[in-house]
Image (tube, rainbow, N blue to C red; front, side, top):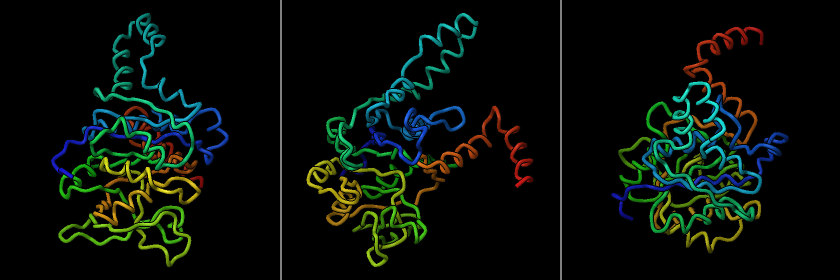
Length: 299
């Protein structure tokens, strides 16, 4: 891999049913659930834009047209703003659809065969370039550099695939993956990984408490690996199994990124993300923090 390559493209798998968010996910795609005044998917594309990504492919499923509508212009609203003498609002709305010129594309995953299969659908879009993957359920807020940009920096340092990782409580590791990782000399946050396992069900099968959470940066060779990866946990094609094959052959980097992750596939994660963003929102932040201070006194 050429570690000077500019990372231009990203894939956001967002085809899942969102069963943990029922009953609302029957009518609203979980990726369109709001964090204050923007849908979750908006934060992912915004992270791409802030990381230098210029083209994003969102992998969707049936009944998720609302995502495409969000990234389109809104003639009805624009006409209303013209009548009300608020033309500046048109530009603000268009900016929310453009994110500084990032081009957003959509493709349906016609069969729900797992995250690995969903990423595999992006082969023609990616071509022969390394690319970022932002998991549709994972919103990560960072006070420093966007997490995708952190992964890109790591790729440029070592020239190999990068997995964004965090430590997971021992009792939770069976719901995630476990990495065989060794800290890279001279670094406090980057590890060399030569194996991993998806959802280890026995303690002795887990390599460590480090798990991939939300972000990876992959070489185009991953598509050939996905093509021959057998269904794994849940009888689905797991991207972790494909990355494990890559790790065993050439190794990958694990980056303990700077950022706070929220699982937007869960009710608790959604509510925590809303509280976090509302508290710093320029429009409502002061009033919301005052409300919280009063509210916690009643608990």
